[in-house]
Image (tube, rainbow, N blue to C red):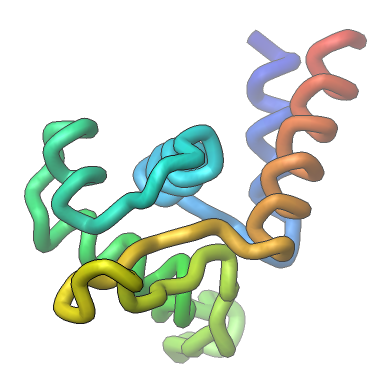
Length: 119
């Protein structure tokens, strides 16, 4: 139990903190090499469309988070872990793909977990 608590604290103190839902969707996008749209993610993960839309927006542009020390809300400049592009087949449809920055974060996250769970 202490290992998981230490791991949680280690991940919590990093500069970029993602919640469980953001991590789930980020890993889902990373593991699917096919063309993905918001509707596909919503259907496959059985989540409401608006939830998936907001989470993807936060993974692309950033989100509000509180700064407890100064008692203010800050807005991140954006993670840019995913990007949205128009489909070549259907210009009305936006496809979601993971960026290099997103792939780097996932490998860093997995490496941190593996290193700390071994001990």
